[in-house]
Amino acid sequence: MGVDYYNVLKVSRTASDEELRKAYKKLAMRWHPDKHPSSSKQVAESKFKQICEAYDVLSDPQKRQIYDLYGEEALKSGQFTDVSSPSSAMRGGGWKGSSFRYNPRDAEDIFAEFFTDGVSEKGNAANGGSDQTARKASAVETQLVCTLEELYKGSKRKMKISRIVSDDSGKPMTVEEVLGIDVKPGWKKGTKITFPEKGNQEPGIMPGDLIFVIDEKPHSVFKRDGNDLMINQKISLLDALTGKTLNLTTLDGRNLTIDVSDIVKPGHEVVIPNEGMPISKDPKKKGNLRIRFDVKFPSRLSTEQKSELRRVLGGSS
Figure 1 (cartoon, rainbow, N blue to C red):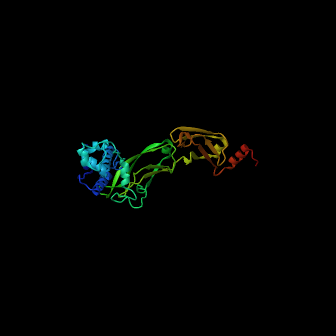
Figure 2 (cartoon, rainbow, N blue to C red):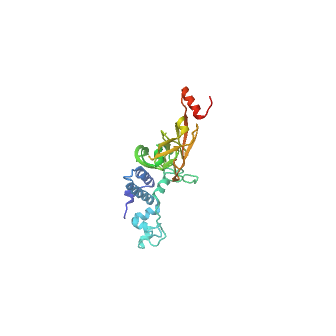
Figure 3 (cartoon, one colour):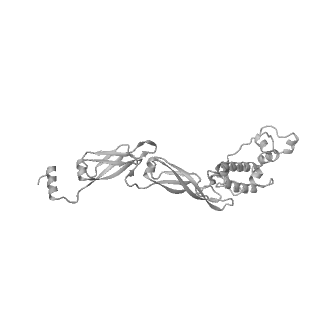
């Protein structure tokens, strides 16, 4: 007979529709792949598909009748003409022809259809004939705080999560799982990464989505402005007038030397092209590095210093 669908659902061969529904609900919730870590997910997927296939066959009167008489292989061969009168067919030496066609259904489609708005506990469509839309728990959002270095270079993060799911009896239980997140260079604050159906679950409905929202940790040197990076650089009045060489360490660890030769006025800004943040849609391109200067004036000058400045700068006494 091949696979024993009754044994898969752990029901008797005389199981009623209600018993089939209860058995399927319990086992499908238990073995849904989303409830299992990666190490056992492959086993869960296989069991889940077999459970859904068993329910698909046994909950359909025509498929169940053929399966009971001839087994799984005969059912899937589709060589049947009339299943309404098995005794006459048997007298004729078995089912013949090809008017019956076995069409397997997708396991996730069966699962989603089982837990839908407009479908009662018994699985019968509710009055009104409205479209069946899978019910889903509310999404859960949580912040993923990244350093500016991570958002510049990209990084791989592993997040340990705890979420509420329903156990075999429908009672809530907490499970833990580790999710991998590939942070892309150039991502900005507010970027969302969605893990479908990895959020909390309520009895009788699909788990909600888990959404990580990128947040940016303040940096001690750089400040982000869109795709640009900004630095507020203090400079002495002497350096502002005579020039200065700045040495900066970039977010990816390079040493950057910047010669400032022009006279720097308060609020003056130097723009270094292509030294800003990577542009997420094209990481080979970057924004600008903008250095804004704050000129530090001396708190006091001696009479001699003032006279010397007047002489050098050409002022009159």
